[in-house]
Amino acid sequence: MSTQLADTVALLRELVAFPTISEVSNLDMIAYLGHRLESCGARVDIFHDEIGHKANLFATFGPEADGGIVLSGHSDVVPVAEQDWASDPFDLIEHDGRLYGRGTCDMKGFIATAVSMAPLLAKRALSRPLHLAFTYDEEVGCLGGQALIESLSARGIRPGVAIIGEPTSMRVIEGHKGCYEYTTRFYGQAGHGSAPERGVNAVEYAVRYVNRLLELAEALRARAPAGSRFDPPWSTINTGSIKGGVAHNVIASNAAVEWEMRPVQRADADFVKDDLRRYCEEMLLPRMQAIFPDAGITTETIGEVDGLEPAEINEARDIVMELTGADGPELVPFGTEAGLFQNYGTSAVVCGPGSIEQAHKPDEFISLDQLQHCIDMLWRLGDKLDA
Image (tube, rainbow, N blue to C red; front, side):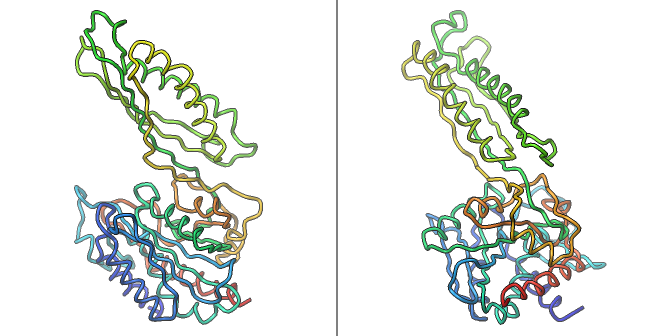
């Protein structure tokens, strides 16, 4: 095992030991990484959330200038409850060329590689800054990623390239759909089921809303971009659940629809949201409030994770293609924080060690070979920092 790989494995062991599932704080891990990066010369900023329970880390080597290269990863991992692990998920186990533990591939393996390589890359960040960005709560809606972009915008920091190290088996990913999740609630007026005209049945209005979602899902098919390589090529809508009412003979006063859409382009998300807003304001609410003035409809945004739209001009993709020698870029069905960087004006690509097939599962692992491939890619990245 090379010295660099051994250092990466040792750091990964330490990172896995931080049980940073999304429901708990990540502050200890962020503080540890911040101290380690500061010790090798980084300028480190730590941005806390509103209650100080979690934080993002943004570290910089090299000149204070726009156009830097970001290595980005999320610090949180999914829960291990009710999963049957062969060993302690927060104690790294090495066996037969694989490293087992929660977060090894998703995505502490990439974080460990980036941080272990940082001292070497720092010496080469002469003409272009190198940034390392580690976020919180990616697994529950990219909350930390959205907050990070706001922090960078407030400070006027404008990176040029972002490499998001999600597990792609080191394949170069230039696109993925977004994931927008909502809960729409309907508030009506209860009454006896024998006189439905005297109440406002929230379930019935929820059904009308679902019918509108179905109509929009069909309309999205016609909006598929020409030559779209996504599967399916259009944006999709899915109704996950509809809940409401208390009994057969009671007019339902409350109902809720849980639904999501996965847009291939942000314009499709705007199209759907604008249509639903008008439908509620012009069709449903007037009918509901004509009977019961206090009737209402609200939509809670659970999460809006922007997709990464394939672009003809994408410096990040081109750089990583060169560094890895990949035959061509691909698309994936899962979401990442890459779209947040893209919407900020930073070219973005997804490429990292480990397979997404292992993510979120018991006995999650990453192979030593994958870590070495990532080390090799980042070593070559140094040429882009002192060019």
